[in-house]
Image 1 (cartoon, rainbow, N blue to C red):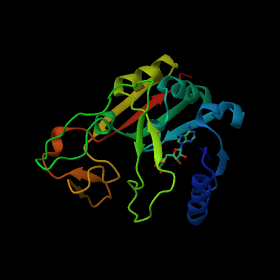
Image 2: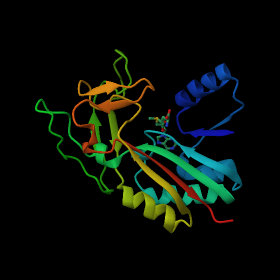
Image 3: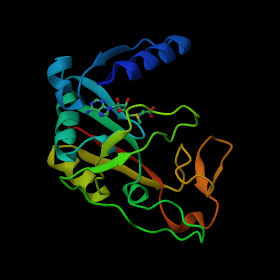
Image 4: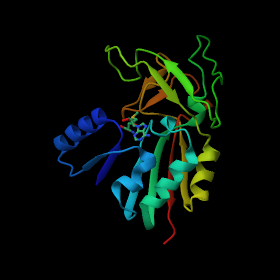
Length: 199
Ligand SMILES: C[S@@+](CC[C@H](N)C(=O)[O-])C[C@H]1O[C@@H](n2cnc3c(N)ncnc32)[C@H](O)[C@@H]1O
């Protein structure tokens, strides 16, 4: 198994976690857009991308092309991500209304945030406070994968997400996921997607 990230701090934490559960993983430092060149391989059986990864990438088509190149013929992508409509919503309002404030579609200009706190449950304050994010619509993600030569085999939208996206408006389920307390059927919060590279 290979884990890839461009942050030495993230890699070090991942290495520690893998060690504690006895997982045999090679961790590699690289920008994901350079993954094929850095790893020097195009024969992976599976590419997995987890929650909170795509929002840091400015161009979804470039990402999809990297995934397609990494996979061997017959290999597959499994993706679980925060839903782009969730990331387009404003902060929760007291009246419980959900308001679309931020871009749903990919735009060239990033969303720029300047905050000294994070979604992780911690009292620690950040010293590097500015982040840049990009949203990508669900259709843009599916189309990017298809244009890169992958075949969509599953796409499911879920009404839960594994972090408290709207503090105070969500409840934690027994499985560790978070759901809206009020009318949770109003919108998807995450999705899972599978796509295969034709053999
Ligand atoms: C929110 S974390 C993802 C957590 C992980 N998906 C999980 O479920 O535990 C985002 C990670 O993406 C990494 N990242 C952001 N942009 C990247 C890029 N262009 N290339 C490689 N890694 C990147 C960050 O360093 C960070 O470790």
